Length: 311
Image 1 (cartoon, one colour):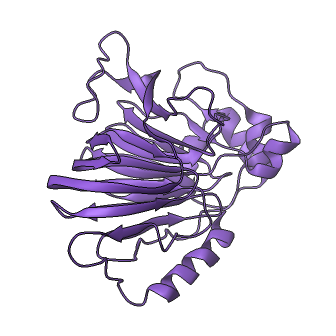
Image 2: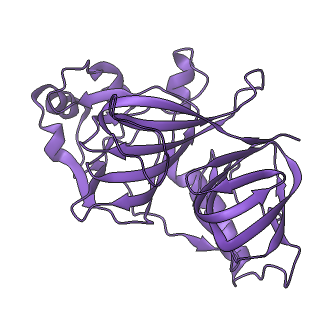
């Protein structure tokens, strides 16, 4: 069983920032940093199914869309890209765009990309700290300025850019029109509380994203599947022999490992490839066992059904 402190890959972007505190001590003064990618330390290890990132924005990203699995595989790629965002920080005027305001025909979408009106046809809305946004493949979307977020996604770097705010980068009109969902997105999902410590934020066909909030000084057993990512939001803990604090990520390659929580408790995101929450993921070793919040069974079944509807 592998327990690794994830290595961090710096990705510079024109819309990035120089100051990454408190999430990282990496200095961005030599060029704006837009993304930090968390990667396996073992370069010979099999490629993970998921990619965990932090994003930092000082300007809007391009308006873009990612392919679904079927289209990706038809072009020789292993998979598409469904993703979810967890907002870590946001300025009072921060916004994201997810989906369209109204239905467009493919012809209307093509015209809107060419004349730039796609920027006013996307569905913009404000975001706040601790908000979760699910972005199925095929959803036209962007992230505005003044946001720090964690992103979990299928491992793919395929992006079809539709509008780029005058940055003069290539647009991908034909591919974008081919994969885009031209209808407004359905209503947002709501988090589901599994236990006092576990909240399911997203359960999709491709991954589950949870938030865990563990009390100070507690001890836990983590029963991970073959790929589990843990990102610390606040507090400290040791997972196995690996220390974890804010902005750091740990990869757990399956099996049972311990979590020893520090004096300030631990809040973290946990992501793993599955179509529904793993009920046995977390067990308390010290004090009382994690108590389910009722009615858990019905909520888990509902999450599994939504995974097929929304992806």
